[in-house]
Length: 136
Picture 1: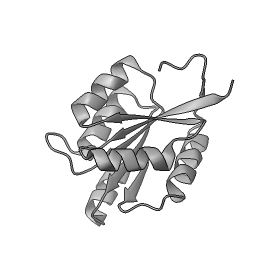
Picture 2: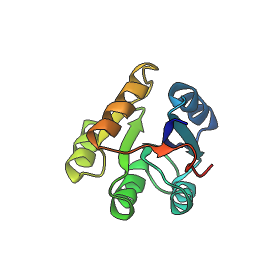
Picture 3: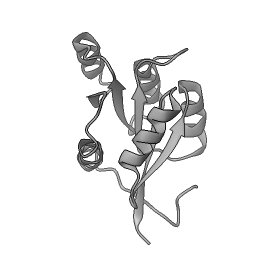
Picture 4: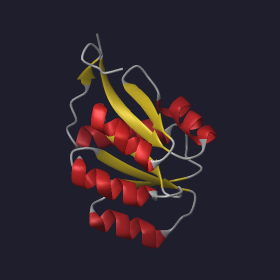
């Protein structure tokens, strides 16, 4: 059996989550989805997550606010923020605070995202889960 890394995609738009799933999902990258920050935090209580990829512009709690909370509760989790706006202030604020490992812009390049994820996992020395130990 192979190993799998768990990627949590958080976006309030179902089409964006589905597109990101198609972009990322592979034998070793498993995608779980959440429609908002609250659902994401609830999922993380019960399941191992290696990477959170959150949209910034969401109702109730922004992606940056979510990733700051993830940083506090789950510091080993890789945190990626995706936004449709090239907001330099947001990027600098997020990166300087350490809440975000990388800022990604919409629309994303389909071939870049899996490479970015694999490099982030490699840099963080994330050990993938055996599919036998995976909590699906």
